[in-house]
Length: 437
Image (cartoon, rainbow, N blue to C red; front, side):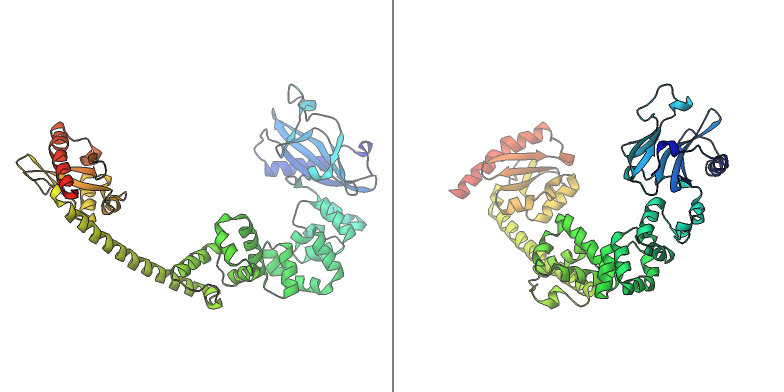
């Protein structure tokens, strides 16, 4: 195991190599930190040395900040720290800052796992292949930056090389996969046969094992696992979880095979339930062609809903008309400048609202009218009785005007308000009293 005394200064040839690489990647000098990693041997042990690079005042600075050794879970650190997951480098000893920061310190140690230096650019990975113990490691083909982690696995599981050469670097540091490879040659063969598909997709490790054990398509298994995770965290699927409580795995497999999702199936389920279909029967529960039957059921649902809405609307119009007829005597057309007429249908409310730009044609005034909670009357100027002018909402329970508005919900002029409150309202209340007597 190396100590602080084993750490040597950056060799001049390596310093020149790093500077050349930095000039290539950063031709315009700036004050930001850059990180590079090179490999070397200290005390006959492979080490990775990460250096920090920075430009300031037209000068180029480079220094060692992190040293990993292959067989240690400790890492040597100097002038570096982590803040909110971000790496910070101190430059006090180079006189680039006036005062030292908390991360300006001499060599010390920390846990290797906290400083993997994934953002550092690797300078000389080929050096590793010159070492006899790693010459067959296939490190030059390894696609990720955690080189030391990979080499530690390689020492325990030589199968790493097989996975990397097959283009499966993603799984070369998975204990589960490596242990399986070491015990099951058929699994290794299966991985190689499916390497193209596996390398192009981010399959979960359980996906690999399940697809291998059950001889099922990888994408289908992956989709099932995705659905399981999705269903576990989403409250949107409470109804589906209840309906398929006893056969959830079968249901998720069905979704994967049909290339659909929980949202589409929820729409299908709601349509089927609205149509009164028995969802305990497999032909309804798991239709052989989901997309086709989804579209059919949704179309049937909209048709049934439209028919129901039309029927409900017809009932509303009829009821509305009967109520209007019942209170027709509350209308007034006497020797005044204005007349007051009752709305005869919901369509009258819609027209009134559109012409005067207010909400009487919306907001369920037609339902309130049909329930006899309030009535809607239209005030018209006598010289133009067809032109919308002022709209009045009248309470049957309290015998008073609830609202009285003109165009754009404006307050009517005083002569109109005087007619509504002092002429028409007393008249309407007398007529209403005679109706209920």
